[in-house]
Image 1 (spheres, rainbow, N blue to C red):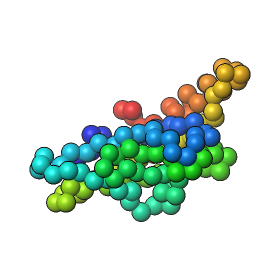
Image 2 (image 1 turned 90 degrees about the vertical axis):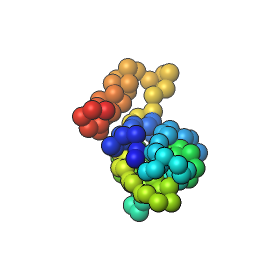
Image 3 (image 1 turned 30 degrees about the vertical axis):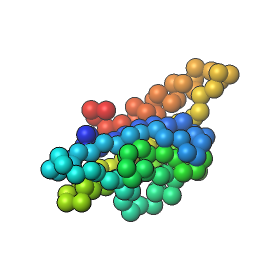
Length: 120
């Protein structure tokens, strides 16, 4: 079982390839076996890598909000006997730099609020 029913997270655009931003955690169905993680089939898998052993979700390429502002993934956890899955929604927001105004910060915060279902 995953520790959450679903995951929703927002990352900044222009996040570099190889940046790990979410650790997915699942427990074994019988609490004995080691859990392995896999990306399910989906059109958004091209942008992310999932560490099979640790559950760390990382960017595979530069994330560009102008190309795509939302990603939907299905993550599978399997301990060799039991299998479970969870959906992961990843939104992107404008990158905030020291030289940009507070308006950009507000855009990012509002984007996060809109994307997150109740309880997140």
